[in-house]
Length: 245
Image (cartoon, rainbow, N blue to C red):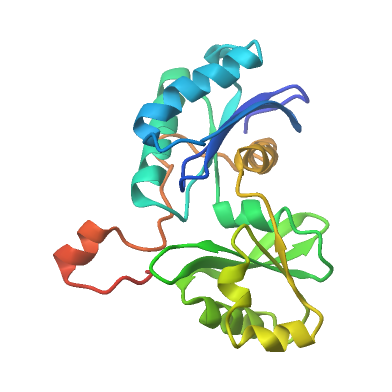
């Protein structure tokens, strides 16, 4: 287990959809953040963006003590670019990586009351990526699996997972669920969907730092993507439908 002092530098990457970004943090403090606000592919955008945030923070890659990366769910191509890049850095610099779910990054922003948080985000094709978490003093623990699912069905599944308890709902894309008929039952309970930031690099960095300090890091070989939905290439090759594992 790597020992981290209070001043460890973490480089955080989120390339899971078009609203990604990169950040560099010193402990809990975001020193520099750059949001992907262009149509440019991550394969072209990422390295110059990392160089820019390091320059703004007056740091070099050799100063970085560990990496935090959003491993999905999201765009197959985007996730792959982020993970491939971080794997290369981890090998070259011999630094650990903390893998963080994007959905946990959304859930960590919840301010609503209750023991449970349901986080979701647009997955295209009339579906959402979603997950339910239980929260306590130590943080968030996922209840069940991450899923790619119709928005109304996500409301139903989340309700089943919490066994009738109150839910704090969070998403950068709240209307995907609030437009569903089944949502009315949650509204009657006084629940709403809190709109949270889609810019996750800072939050991914904070969650990643906590993982690194707890020794829950991985190396380049152990880093794996969490696509939830299979790639189109795999779906078409196997003649399958577009649904999660």
